[in-house]
Length: 152
Image 1: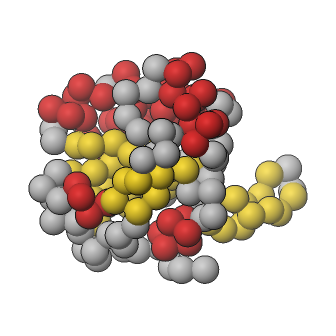
Image 2 (image 1 turned 180 degrees about the vertical axis):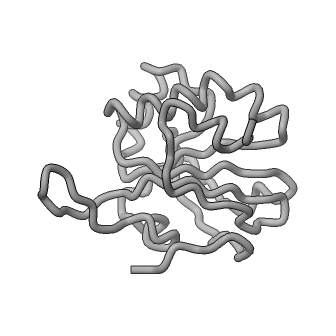
């Protein structure tokens, strides 16, 4: 298990398919700021709140120069359904083999109702135009995530 990359370090590059099966390469976003958000599961309450908050504020994020990429271990087909249902304007990446999660240290032990299990640690990485991690948001407020990103 990799350690989570810290602010000031280069964002680990990756290529993974989006909901349409098209490869998305992080380094192809050079010159743009990227909000790379890891979330546990399509169509669950917290993940839907987070995605919809980003959707509702997408224009504000774009105005500040951000591209938004959601990533989870769901399949392309599950992502398509989620995007369609919630009208999400940004791509969702299908990291089914957890390779990207491992590079970013976002696959780890969680606990719910006293049970320990492995899963996605909800984390957002803010990456600058040069591909350097500006900020890591570990305590994501799903209903108000855009405000955490834009800080006001």
